[in-house]
Image 1 (cartoon, rainbow, N blue to C red):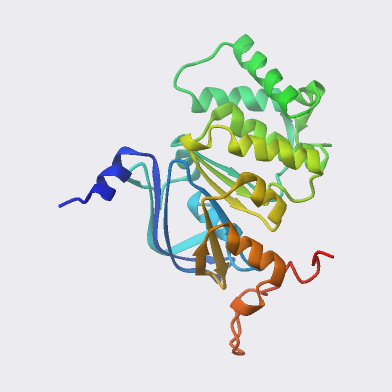
Image 2 (image 1 turned 135 degrees about the vertical axis):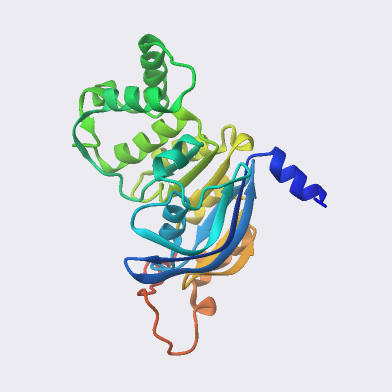
Length: 274
């Protein structure tokens, strides 16, 4: 018999990851990862470099570089573990990579038109789409002339990250996966991105990989997950992020000499606050 929580998760958009074990580049990456997220959740994934944070986001998207050995990923009461990436995207999951790629030969405006035609059930006219894109460009403080360039070619680092947010705003996904969207950005750009995350957050699931406490304090995650050596070590509130920002990951790192598949480094050791 279903309990009340199970019924609620079926009705709502939800993400259910159970016993997820993967390899990345033929190395062990994630080991028995399990957690759930529902509409309105903003989840921050923290961990040393090489702990599997990016791999987790890629696994949800069934990225070609990640091999899922065991476990399952469910969304909207569908098992999407082995779905192709384009089908997962059409279901309403948006992934922003840590380093957005450049697409030579594809004009940004044409890119938006193609994606809109592929991902919307009601076909919007070109004028409506163009008007909406221009409004979003203005809200993100991006120049209109970017529309005539090839996707991300010649863009600054901040423009590439804002372009990712523009795509998310344009298509309004049910899940947004943001891999260090705040890295390398100035204060104003971070504020713009944080405002987007906070806007209408109750209608989607947001999962963020970040090393910046100021950014996390602005977006106010509902849950913080600490990932080390491909395993969830601890979950908590924003207080967990504050503790890690102050003291680093040292107390959570393995004390034995066991060799790991990934080089584990602590990004906080080189950027302690004065």
